[in-house]
Each structure stands twice: as structure tokens, then as C-alpha cells.
Image (tube, rainbow, N blue to C red; front, top):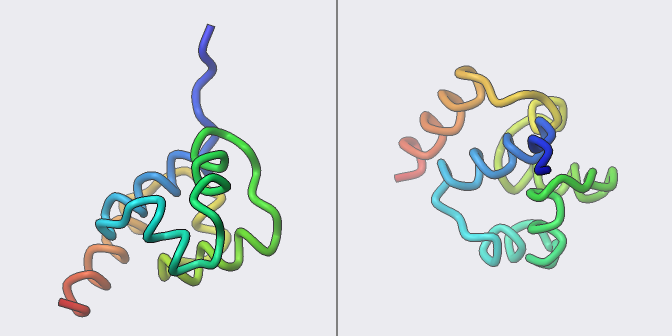
Length: 85
């Protein structure tokens, strides 16, 4: 039986997708090996250091990365992406 992914995993995947990043590219930007990012996206809790690096690379707060995906996070990411373009 498969268990649902924890909130941080769903939020990380969503944020990465909105930013248009692969796990490899996010790994490069955050300094975290893509294998570690894959593990976090599959449910493993990130370390404090990983959390800080991922949130910085994605441009969101650490607390947002640990929470359920929300419309506010999505809008923040989309607006940030549009400004960068």
C-alpha cells in the first residue's frame, strides 16, 4: 500500500515544476546532489541545511517549503518567475 507523500515533498515538487527546474538543475543551484532532492521529494525529511539551501534556490520561505502547497506559494513563484523573464 502506498502512503501519500508528506506536505514538504508535494510542495518541493510543485515549486520545482513551477520554476521549470529539473532535480539536477535544482541540485546545481542549491548545492545539493540531485539524488538527495529525489529522496526529499519521495518523503524523506530534509536536513536543516538542505531546507535552507532549497528554500533559497526556489525563492520561498523555509516554513512555506515544509507546509502544504498553497495558492499563495504558487502565486509567489509565478510572480517571481515572470519578473525574472
